[in-house]
Amino acid sequence: MTQLAKLKIAALFGEYLDTDQYDLFKQLLTKDCLYQIHDKTYHNSTDIANLYESNMKAGKAKFDRLQWGKAIVSHIKDDIYKVHFTDYLEHKGISHTYECDQWVYLNNELKIYKIEHHEIPAKKEALEKFYKLVGLS
Image 1 (cartoon, one colour):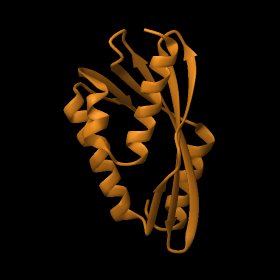
Image 2 (image 1 turned 135 degrees about the vertical axis):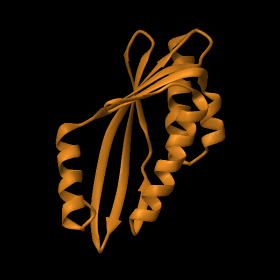
Image 3 (image 1 turned 120 degrees about the horizontal axis):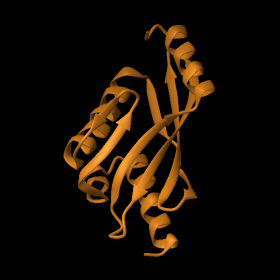
Image 4 (image 1 turned 45 degrees about the horizontal axis):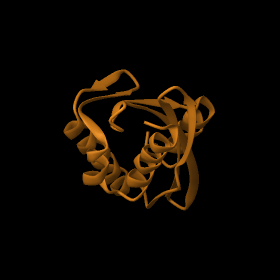
Protein backbone atom coordinates (compact mmCIF):
# COMPACT_ATOMS: atom_id res chain seq x y z
CA MET A 1 0.00 0.00 0.00
CA THR A 2 1.14 3.49 -0.67
CA GLN A 3 2.22 5.93 2.00
CA LEU A 4 -0.54 8.28 0.80
CA ALA A 5 -3.22 5.66 1.51
CA LYS A 6 -1.77 5.07 4.97
CA LEU A 7 -1.56 8.79 5.63
CA LYS A 8 -5.28 9.03 4.81
CA ILE A 9 -6.07 6.30 7.36
CA ALA A 10 -4.03 8.14 10.01
CA ALA A 11 -5.96 11.31 9.16
CA LEU A 12 -9.26 9.45 9.56
CA PHE A 13 -8.05 8.22 12.96
CA GLY A 14 -7.70 11.84 14.06
CA GLU A 15 -10.90 13.01 12.38
CA TYR A 16 -13.07 10.27 13.88
CA LEU A 17 -11.76 10.95 17.37
CA ASP A 18 -12.13 14.72 16.92
CA THR A 19 -15.78 14.22 15.92
CA ASP A 20 -16.63 11.48 18.47
CA GLN A 21 -17.36 8.88 15.78
CA TYR A 22 -16.28 5.82 17.75
CA ASP A 23 -17.98 3.20 15.57
CA LEU A 24 -16.12 4.48 12.51
CA PHE A 25 -12.94 4.81 14.56
CA LYS A 26 -13.20 1.17 15.63
CA GLN A 27 -13.36 0.07 11.99
CA LEU A 28 -9.87 1.50 11.41
CA LEU A 29 -8.37 -0.90 13.96
CA THR A 30 -7.40 -4.55 13.73
CA LYS A 31 -9.47 -6.67 16.11
CA ASP A 32 -6.34 -7.37 18.19
CA CYS A 33 -5.04 -3.79 18.07
CA LEU A 34 -2.81 -2.70 20.97
CA TYR A 35 -3.15 0.69 22.66
CA GLN A 36 -0.37 1.75 25.00
CA ILE A 37 -1.10 4.72 27.25
CA HIS A 38 1.05 5.56 30.24
CA ASP A 39 1.71 2.22 31.97
CA LYS A 40 -1.35 0.40 30.56
CA THR A 41 -1.92 -1.65 27.43
CA TYR A 42 -5.32 -2.43 25.95
CA HIS A 43 -5.61 -5.42 23.63
CA ASN A 44 -8.60 -5.24 21.30
CA SER A 45 -10.49 -2.80 19.13
CA THR A 46 -13.70 -2.91 21.16
CA ASP A 47 -11.98 -2.10 24.45
CA ILE A 48 -9.95 0.65 22.79
CA ALA A 49 -12.99 2.32 21.19
CA ASN A 50 -14.91 2.06 24.46
CA LEU A 51 -12.00 3.60 26.36
CA TYR A 52 -11.80 6.60 24.03
CA GLU A 53 -15.56 7.09 24.27
CA SER A 54 -15.67 6.79 28.06
CA ASN A 55 -12.76 9.24 28.38
CA MET A 56 -14.66 11.71 26.20
CA LYS A 57 -17.81 11.38 28.30
CA ALA A 58 -15.84 11.71 31.56
CA GLY A 59 -14.06 14.80 30.24
CA LYS A 60 -17.28 16.47 29.14
CA ALA A 61 -18.80 15.76 32.55
CA LYS A 62 -15.71 17.03 34.40
CA PHE A 63 -15.12 20.34 32.59
CA ASP A 64 -17.45 23.26 31.96
CA ARG A 65 -16.27 23.12 28.33
CA LEU A 66 -14.29 20.53 26.40
CA GLN A 67 -13.71 21.02 22.70
CA TRP A 68 -11.49 19.02 20.39
CA GLY A 69 -9.22 20.78 17.92
CA LYS A 70 -8.35 19.45 14.48
CA ALA A 71 -5.81 16.63 14.52
CA ILE A 72 -2.60 17.14 12.55
CA VAL A 73 -0.98 14.09 10.95
CA SER A 74 2.63 13.59 9.95
CA HIS A 75 4.66 10.63 8.77
CA ILE A 76 7.36 9.46 11.22
CA LYS A 77 8.94 6.53 9.39
CA ASP A 78 7.99 3.33 7.64
CA ASP A 79 4.37 2.58 8.62
CA ILE A 80 4.26 4.88 11.67
CA TYR A 81 2.32 8.15 11.73
CA LYS A 82 2.03 10.81 14.40
CA VAL A 83 -1.42 12.26 15.10
CA HIS A 84 -1.16 15.48 17.12
CA PHE A 85 -4.27 16.30 19.15
CA THR A 86 -5.28 19.60 20.74
CA ASP A 87 -8.01 19.82 23.40
CA TYR A 88 -9.53 23.10 24.57
CA LEU A 89 -10.62 22.93 28.20
CA GLU A 90 -12.45 25.41 30.39
CA HIS A 91 -13.41 25.10 34.02
CA LYS A 92 -14.43 27.72 36.57
CA GLY A 93 -13.79 30.44 34.01
CA ILE A 94 -10.20 29.37 33.35
CA SER A 95 -9.18 28.11 29.93
CA HIS A 96 -6.42 25.67 29.08
CA THR A 97 -5.09 24.08 25.90
CA TYR A 98 -3.77 20.53 26.18
CA GLU A 99 -1.81 18.74 23.47
CA CYS A 100 -0.54 15.20 23.02
CA ASP A 101 0.63 12.89 20.26
CA GLN A 102 -0.52 9.44 19.35
CA TRP A 103 1.56 7.28 17.08
CA VAL A 104 -0.39 4.88 14.91
CA TYR A 105 1.12 1.83 13.23
CA LEU A 106 -0.52 0.59 10.03
CA ASN A 107 -0.33 -2.77 8.31
CA ASN A 108 -0.55 -3.44 4.57
CA GLU A 109 -4.32 -3.96 4.82
CA LEU A 110 -4.62 -0.31 5.89
CA LYS A 111 -5.59 -1.22 9.45
CA ILE A 112 -4.11 0.25 12.61
CA TYR A 113 -2.55 -2.51 14.67
CA LYS A 114 -0.90 -0.41 17.37
CA ILE A 115 -1.47 2.99 19.01
CA GLU A 116 1.03 4.63 21.36
CA HIS A 117 0.08 7.66 23.47
CA HIS A 118 2.95 10.13 23.80
CA GLU A 119 2.73 12.93 26.31
CA ILE A 120 4.49 16.20 25.56
CA PRO A 121 6.22 16.80 28.92
CA ALA A 122 5.61 20.55 29.14
CA LYS A 123 1.96 20.08 28.13
CA LYS A 124 1.43 17.33 30.72
CA GLU A 125 2.95 19.53 33.46
CA ALA A 126 0.77 22.47 32.40
CA LEU A 127 -2.33 20.23 32.50
CA GLU A 128 -1.47 19.12 36.05
CA LYS A 129 -1.11 22.77 37.09
CA PHE A 130 -4.46 23.59 35.46
CA TYR A 131 -6.13 20.72 37.37
CA LYS A 132 -4.75 22.08 40.65
CA LEU A 133 -5.76 25.63 39.79
CA VAL A 134 -9.39 24.67 39.15
CA GLY A 135 -9.62 22.14 41.99
CA LEU A 136 -9.71 18.94 39.94
CA SER A 137 -6.64 17.23 41.38
